[in-house]
Image (cartoon, rainbow, N blue to C red; front, side, top):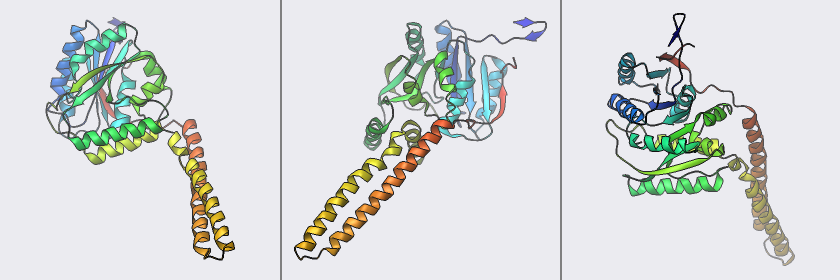
Length: 319
């Protein structure tokens, strides 16, 4: 469409956002698979790749796709910003008027679910998430994830959906709401639940990667888990306060025991020393808890850090 010779961008109904890091083996195939499912769903669409510092030629491959199809777009970060900031930034840059779909580049999120996402969305769901019912992982990984979800469910400020990775569809209203939060380390899948919009889930079995190797080693996953917990649980900052209360009460009881021991003529000084140690620990926990409350308040007031800095973008309109 043009007006006076100037190109005017018409927003598609659906945006599919594909974060990638060294996905040269999968980029072309995932673009084709997502495009096929969106065409089959009879929607206008765009496919937005956001590259998070690839070194294997992923950017060049996606640029070639962009040259062939203007509906394929690319954002290239100037460095790796991690698994939380980069995908969320890509979602915020999507131009769809209706909804945004988040999907990984390695086919561990099956594109075949996209028509079901769209159907649930058209029926009224603001958020539709794919939830892993099972996947091909070892017993140790299963145990660690199960323990992690249990910890999250105990300390998170809102429910965490086990098996949800963020793969799903989000209505434009949801995206605009979350964008306003300006969270510098956005735990996006948790923010979706926190937003309170109507949410539905679709179970699926997670297949193996189509190609390449996973970038998620145990240290990467641990860092992601810690960032996620920090971003989704302000209650955790208050944890030292109940500890201080329990230990403080215990120190009082220990001190009473020391007095009884002294009156009865026993050796009271070891008990007194233990009571003092408990009291000191309780005081430290109290101070940490109060500091945590201050950090929580500061966090609520300051969400101004940009998620990423772009190096370049391709096929985005200037209008």
